[in-house]
Each structure stands twice: as structure tokens, then as C-alpha cells.
Amino acid sequence: MAMKKTMITLMAGCLVAVLGACESQNVEQKAQKLENNELAGTWVLKSILLGDMMDLPCGIPNEGKFEPITLELTTTKDETGAVLLLNGRSSVNQYSGSYALESYDETTKTGKLKMSPIGSTKMGGSPELMQCESRYFLLLGQAVDYQLSTINGKQQLELGVLSTQKSAAPIGGKGNFLIFEKQSK
Image (cartoon, rainbow, N blue to C red):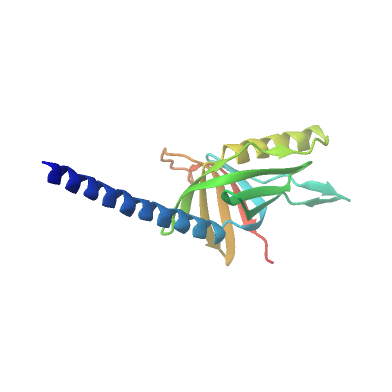
């Protein structure tokens, strides 16, 4: 009987050691993927998909021209590991926050993420630009899905909420998405 208890204790100890090693390896693999984050870089908002409707983004007025709304995604490290940061310029204010990657399918280039609350400067603008900015911040803050693709040789990022309902619309009605194009270095 004592021998049986000893064997069970030894087997349990081995199992804990093996599982601990696997967990350590999974954490290291996740950290490596975060460092090689395909999302990292500066993205320019090109369009907004709201269900079955495609809309153009408003921009930042600058001497009669409109500058695009930008999103910069970076990875940095602190004592807890990799930290994924976002910042950019909306139609009126600069903003910042962080996000966490929850999953990624390399085959479909789709994934899940979680946004932190987004903070911004508090400058005022015209009612139209403030409304545009509010919509942008709302859609960005609600984003839980993303997809990477290449269209006409340019990297594209769709960031938003994927619809689970099928649609016969020409655009596809796949949800509410901010559609960005990656800026060249």
C-alpha cells in the first residue's frame, strides 16, 4: 500500500513538472509571436464598413487639405513582458491605449483582440469632425476581431466586430469594420 502511494506521488510530481515545462514553452512562444507582431506599424484609415454600407473616413483639416486618420501599433517590453500599444491621430485629437492579442489563425489571417479604454487629448473641433471622431473612437474601442490581407500589393487591416449573420449584400455585410492600409516605411 505504501509503495502504491509512493508511485502515485512520483507520477503526480512528474506530471506537474512536464505540464510546467509545457506552460513555460507556451508563454515563450506567445512572447515571440508578440515581438513579431504583423500588426505593428503605422496604418491609415481608408474606409469604414458599417454592415452593408461602405463609408469614407473624415480626415484632419490642415491648410485646406485633409490629412488621414492614423493608427500606430507598437510592441514594447516591461517587467511583465510584451506590451502592445496603440496611438494615432483622429479627426481632431491624438489618442492612445493598449490592446491584447487573444488569438490568431495564420491560415485565414484573422484573429481576436481586446482593446483597453482609449484616451485622447481634449481639443475641440467643428461638430462634424467631433461626430466623426466619436464614431471612430467608438468603433475602435469596440473592436474584437481583425483580419490582415494584401490588396493590390498593399497590406490591409480590418479592425472591428465580425457579424455572424449571412448577407446577400454586394459588400458582404460582414460587420462593422475600420479598414486601414499600412504605410510604407
